[in-house]
Length: 149
Image 1 (cartoon, rainbow, N blue to C red):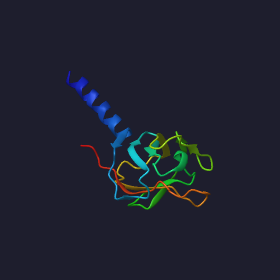
Image 2: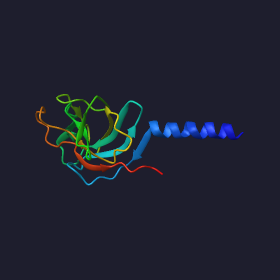
Image 3: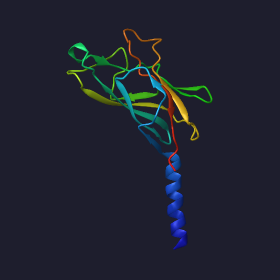
Image 4: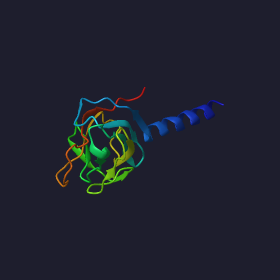
């Protein structure tokens, strides 16, 4: 019976190492109030950033949103950048998602290479070097990845 308990505990511990999730992670600053980080998830293959973008009332006809292909996350301590691999739920610029009304929200996911398990602070940077007509980048600074006890 003890062996079964150890096997189950081992499997749960292994799962915890391969898929860690940070809900509503705190950060020190961001470049726009339009975007929110819902969660960040580490899987066996990716670091996935789940975000929500809300059209402000000041946009005429709701506005639009896209993400640049040059978006990256940076391990603050190591100063290492991880480039965007793929996107789900929002177009890659120059394509655009056109909001149809004020306050409309879209949820999307950004996929990056898997970070090391001990990374504690990252920047999420939408690099505008190749973007045209993009004025409000989705940047977050010193996002804290607090380990769950």
